[in-house]
Amino acid sequence: MPVSFGHLTSLQLPSHATELVRLEHSLELPSLTNRLRQSPRLILGGGSNLVVRSTENEPLDVTVIRNDIRGIVRLPADGNAVGIRCAAGENWHRFVMWTLSQGLGGLENLSLIPGTVGAAPIQNIGAYGVELSERVSAVHAWDFEAATHRVFGLTECAFGYRSSRFKDPSRQGPWNRPRYLITAVDFALWPAHRAPRVVHYPGLEGLCANGPEAPMQIAHAVMSLRRKKLPDPDQIANVGSFFQNPQVPAPVAASLLETHPSMPVHPGADGVKLSAGWLIDSLGLKGSRHGQAGVYDHHALVLVNHGGASAEELLWLARDIQQRVLARYGVWLEPEPTIVPPVERPA
Ligand SMILES: Cc1cc2nc3c(=O)[nH]c(=O)nc-3n(C[C@H](O)[C@H](O)[C@H](O)COP(=O)(O)OP(=O)(O)OC[C@H]3O[C@@H](n4cnc5c(N)ncnc54)[C@H](O)[C@@H]3O)c2cc1C
Image (cartoon, rainbow, N blue to C red):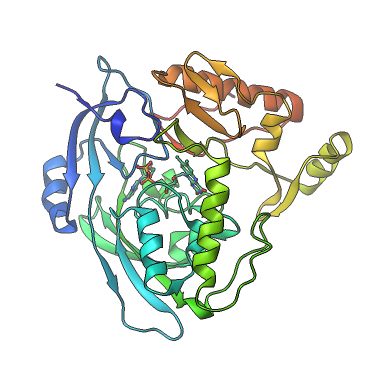
């Protein structure tokens, strides 16, 4: 009898799998590994970056492992940094609020991002000028292949824009046999009065407060901006940004700017970063729908489930957007959430 787990995901698509297990302690992992052996598996955190393609009649042939490992501890002092270890099943935003309540700064720009702490390294979450990789010192993971715990230092995590070794199929394995399950993350934070202020982002520029209250002020400003911009998944089902901002070589950006002078561009690690939201918005797609799936009225980068959408409807809409952007700008938009089973990019 398949189990339904769509209600554990923020997109609320019909989602079915062979089995669902709740992982409450990393000590359970050896016996779970033994029991599953080579069986297919899917790791689930808060389900806020996951698009599941399955039906009750065709459930995913996987054991869904819902990560619910809890706990936060302070690490011994290391230079100027304040070390905190947070278990992977803790809610990300509640953890950020906890650090602020402890008088620690560093995570405030990442307030109100849904999901778990353990999923944050997967795509190196980022917002308002800060990426997770700038605040992490180590990632603890269970290695299903070697049946052992491992600790990855910062460089070993291979963090990039919305990427890491834990998202890279050549290191993490196929979607239904992930090699590593993140069990905890170590953070290097600062006492609030010494935390760097990242306020160059539009909407935060006015905030230049010094002193221990500054990180909390930035967090509140970020939360207010996010509430205005993004739909609350409890009100309208969504996974946040559906596409990554594409990066193109500088000459390609220059030629696009000649024909589209108002197009926003930013320096990126691998070229020039374009705004996926702007590209979609410029095609007049905000508010468009396919069945019960749609482009959010107030933000073209967010695809929503208006209620009862199927994965087919949502992915048809996503593919339509990709093809229209490609036809107009010659740029292919890569999805940001994990799609299971994955959808192949057309040749
Ligand atoms: C309204 C909204 C706003 C958002 N804003 C942002 C934003 O500003 N910036 C940003 O970067 N993201 C944003 N997101 C995306 C999402 O919140 C993050 O990617 C988040 O880290 C996902 O966490 P999760 O626990 O929900 O992961 P899930 O959706 O459960 O899982 C995502 C992927 O990670 C894998 N995974 C999960 N936990 C583990 C683990 N412990 N070990 C190994 N693999 C694991 C899953 O198998 C899956 O492949 C937003 C989403 C929503 C709905």
